[in-house]
Image (cartoon, rainbow, N blue to C red; front, side, top):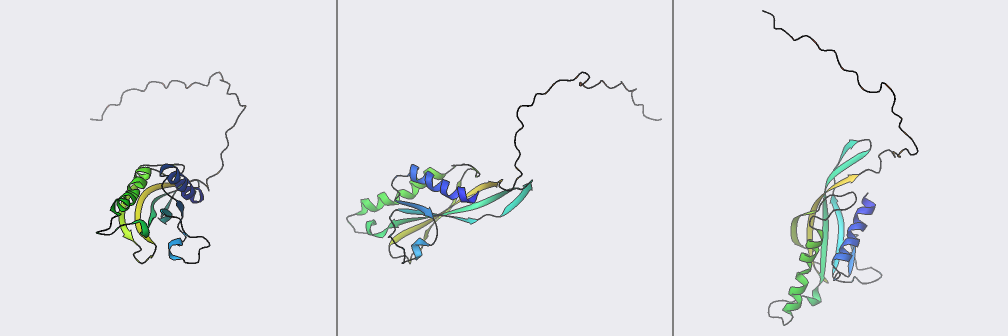
Length: 178
């Protein structure tokens, strides 16, 4: 289930927000300097932060999970006070709102509607990106360990005589003892 959740969300984000250059699983790419190719910004890194599971029955589990997105914007395109490139910075800061519009109440196979629960500035030590962390809550359903019930085909149900319920005999009314 998890091996399909994060790629599904990554594909959805790439389709819904074409301005994103990178959408990937968070494998500490922002903290590493030894990557074979430089990161393309703007980028979103996905991680399932917390997913406490509860057994339902027959191998089915559910979880109220926390999904963390790290949104990384290139510092060279962000402006500071007095910069003549403020409009570029404001345009890039609209990107997290576009991501939110794509994800809020979005649901897919094995997960319920996403709901944003927090938004904060993150990784101030990263030298090449302005990073924001956006957290969403969702309900997960994992049926991978459930038995494989296969439908029965080519079976005809034949009604049988006397297959309807028989009427119950009427009982005498109950009288309270005196």
